[in-house]
Length: 267
Image 1 (tube, rainbow, N blue to C red):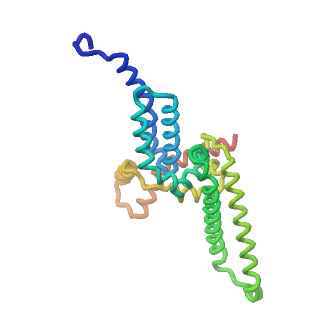
Image 2: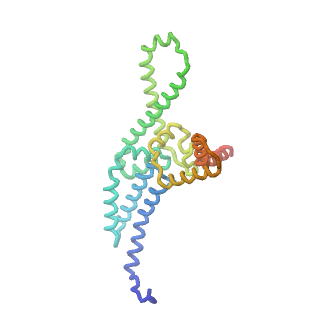
């Protein structure tokens, strides 16, 4: 800058730039997480925002020389834009049923909501268990011949059986939620069966609250993959065969992950 005869940065300028970088690094990391593809789940939103708010408040409390107005503006903007989502039950459950977060982030952000979210988790798991049980019952009942005598006394015994079944399902759901919240997530489990305690109900609830609309990049990749499938076959494909080939090609990474999990289990 001296050779170009430009005014050099002063010590105050350098101090400001350093402080600005320390403040904005949290916002930059937040944007990378919420717009990324590897964690394109609703569950990332609230925990990511909660840790960002926490970091910015901690930095403000430690004292800032230049960027305190910037931090105040960002805190106000985040609260104004995303504040209602911190009380949205679907967003809370999306994070609560992810093995990485559970309710740890909510306990630090707003502990007063933890009990309500726990109740909602129990209700969500209970509902999923009933739906899976009803589906299994409908499958079993198909093609079965009803016993005339059992059918005769059905009106007397059905209500009591239903009440006992309701209590049993409720207690199982509550126990499963408590065990889930006490689990420690291992990163090597990723989002495979082990991360969800191999419980189909937990996987079902996670999918319900975290299945999102794919980003444009994912759609573009899907279209590119379809073009590759057509080129490789060089023949007219029926719709059904094309869908099968697309499904297999798009999920090859899952087969690899399953093979690695089988190797670990054998070891």
